[in-house]
Length: 546
Image (cartoon, rainbow, N blue to C red; front, side, top):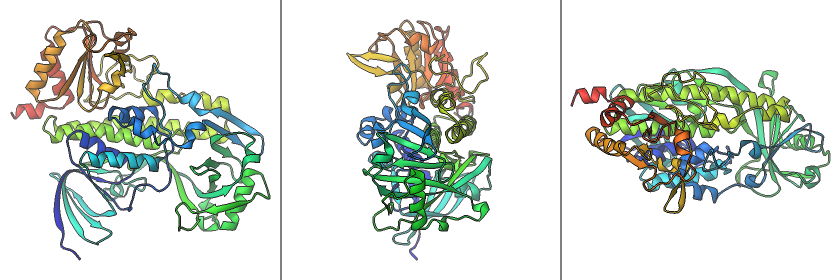
């Protein structure tokens, strides 16, 4: 066996799915060079998630990736419908245009759903992370780790050469998927319904034109051959994926899904007994054997164990309804990255990292409730049941309540606010407002690229100098923008949406959430801003020791 080599990194990321890769990208854009290890030899080989919500696209847009992502849009971009029926040829229980219900108006967001298959998105994000300096190592397995109070010490193995390497890191991000091996090793369980069921997913080629009857959908739910069966088109014309639930508690197993049985299940789901079809493997050269998919619903009891943090499916597992899973994981990484960077750069106290769990775990719990409601509606409900669920409020309107937010008195207790009527309160996503910069339309959200941002109202000029002085005294980067100077609010919506007067200001965190606001010009604006930043960044311990 090769002699171990030492490697030092600020952050070790374990898991190279979309959440881990996004964490690497966010950290590199904040000036760090994380190391990512992933035991598989490459990024995803199957579509997995196929839609990423507009909040996720806002995050990627601010990093300049929206154009590249949209250039790889999947065929689902032209197939907005979802149907529910007994079989493909049978009567429909419901048919809805999912994008009509879920597409945000331009007054709510500068972007839209990203209809890109996850395997394609992972290629984009991995390339961007590596361009920015991330050390990404596929085909590398974590075999041991110790998350000590002072550091993380890990041993990884290159699966190609067999060589082992010791890695010394300040922090560990566990993005190792729904098996959550790292979390399990640390003895941290999860709460929720748990395993909802098992399904066999397999691919086939067939001409379904007659059964489709002109319909062009992204997803169909069938009652045959088993309630909960799903059918979805893939990238290649005439290629489909069928998912059929099975019951291990009744003695059923994935081994029961022989090629002959899979073909029969397709014919029953379509409703055509003599359908001509061919089972195909997910990758050329592989067997067409079905993939064993476990559907789960749970949220980890803790999101942190010392210097180890859990993100994505390692922290929460949702049923696929609503396309919440991957997008929630990306938001986890976005929330955690700026906090790790601030602590590692000495700009924030270590207790800032406690707010990761305080903020993201309640969001996961609310999201799980929403996903379960959607699951029941799609399997058993009607179009009215589906349209009664407000996905846009869940996507844009969740609220943080932690020490990293200056929560205002009389803030409602509800975890969700209607984003169509934004209040601009601290703890909520900073509202989108279209602005004009030298004849080019930009969103307020385009200004949030990784630093704290001070948005100053037209008559609040003293906030500008106050912010510069406070930033210099604390050694914190602040991006300062004054509405009316370089950025014109031609629609006249900024003050109302941010809930301030013409002399006020809003302080937006690096993740695009409002941390504090002042409705009017304060008596001592520099002192106020410095005190707020000290609080939000948990700097009391740092500043006492300077």
